[in-house]
Length: 299
Image (cartoon, rainbow, N blue to C red; front, top):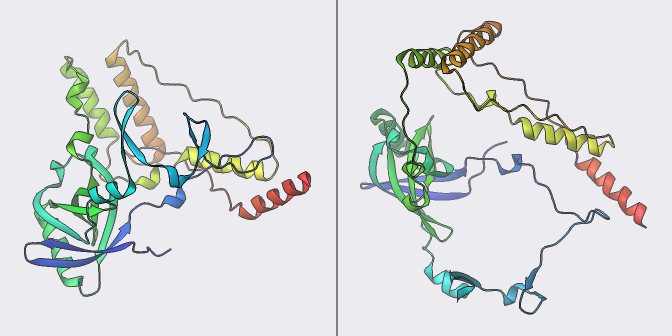
């Protein structure tokens, strides 16, 4: 399925303006979603808002937003007041700085989009991508969307660009607040740990090698229910031991197990992965049949 652009933007750096198209980098339709149903008859439920003071359902036209500044004390804002405070949407990514990509900790990444050249922008777009790739840097800039201002970085990904929307600094908890203290390790233990890392190292990351096993199990369970079969509950996996009595023994055993797995896989250092269960076939017709059957049973 061809990607569909969700917006048009301009990347502005220096006196150069590059017209680009914005694409979502993730596929929301791949997520499984369940609806809330009435257990008695299987009908859909709808959400309502109830006033705790009057104990009645409140219509959306009566609802305003409020900020709790103290326990059970609120300041209220009308939709018009909130609209006036929003950042005006822009169709431009204003580049302010260029920094090494490694300087931006991935913990700040919030959302990712793709950028591709728009009409008339192929040459400056390719120039920008090539310059970023050769410099080893990413562009840091600002972009306003959906009423909010965002800090973003732009980096090359293949022949296209990735735009990463970042968390603001106060939104990210510093790891220093965890109070982790370094423990003393012996050189022999460090040597074994390095060997284990080297043995399981690859030069590239292949996300397809790590399928969503939970999603596959849920899809298979859905299909079994649609077909009227029983759903079996899998036994929980045993949790890895938390108490390491002898670190050296654990490292040696890990090296031996990794070596055995690599030999079975036929290539040294390649992590073995389980094959993903087959994707359950489309069940919409079956769901329609089930709904018709349920209505007939209640009539």
